[in-house]
Amino acid sequence: MEGYEENKYGLRELTIEEIKFIAEAGKRLGIKAYKITGGEPTLREDLVDIVGILKSYNSYVSITTNASLLHRHLDRLVEVGIDHINVSLHAISPHVFKIVTGTDLHKRTIENLYLARDYGVKLKINFVVLKEMNEEDISRVIELASKLDASVQFIELHPVGRAVKIYKKHRLPRWKVLEILEDRVVEIKYRIGLHNRPVLLLDNGVRVELVGPVGNFLFCAGCTRIRITYDFKLVPCLNWRGPVIEVRPSLEAAKSFEEKIEVVVRAIREANSMREPFVKYPAKPVSILRPKRDEDFRIGIPKRDGRIDVSPSAKKYMKKRDVGYTELV
Ligand code: SF4
Image 1 (cartoon, rainbow, N blue to C red):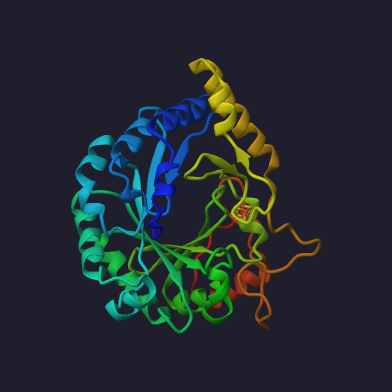
Image 2: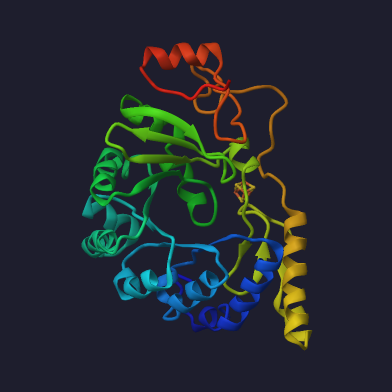
């Protein structure tokens, strides 16, 4: 856990043995991808061992990190075959970076991004857009991504955890980001599965995803994740308010390796059965990206192969702005 100094959190963190149980249970259930987040995963000295265990099951493995300690792990992460790294970058300006993170680690973070590029790691920059804080940096992030051969995820602030307090003041809706970028968009696609996110291809070749969960039924409809907490609880949704699944008590009661794997398999199945979209589809059609505007249009529901069914009004709009689209035939 990042930012917590008390030892009690560290002592409860998932052990290597528990991670092996998760990997084995995941294999039996057909889980194909793991993202290691945190807190801050690079604080664990054994991060490379964890990635190595999950990779040994032929899984797709990525981490999300603030990159300030990435240099300590990079060479071995590459050795064990990390598939990509998401770097949470809070600002391009060192001044704003310090306000958001409370640290002077801006320079090192940027250096580590370049280091990761030099190691040939696939990079994604996570950029939480904050009104009146870092919105000026949107174009600068795109330029940085182009130099790093990285893609960018512009993330809408959502009202969870500590962000509840600053949500109203600093939330910049995702369609505002789209407005800033729209003159540079040459193609719009959808990712099917992972939150059905719109993917924008920009004129300099950078791929941008808009990650906007707030009130977004399409986003929740494409949610494919279960969260495992640092102390081995399973949570079916980021906004979950009900009881979570505690794995450890049953795990401790189980004797053999097989019994322990069975406990984890059952827990994952149970968490999966509790999952439901937090934001549900509305009964009547609404537009996806630009609600409450005169030139509003519905660009359609993405199909299985990633194409979208573009309505006549959307076609007109896109033609006017010279934006490409893939038509459903
Ligand atoms: S269902 Fe929950 S975890 Fe999944 S995208 Fe929606 S809010 Fe996030």
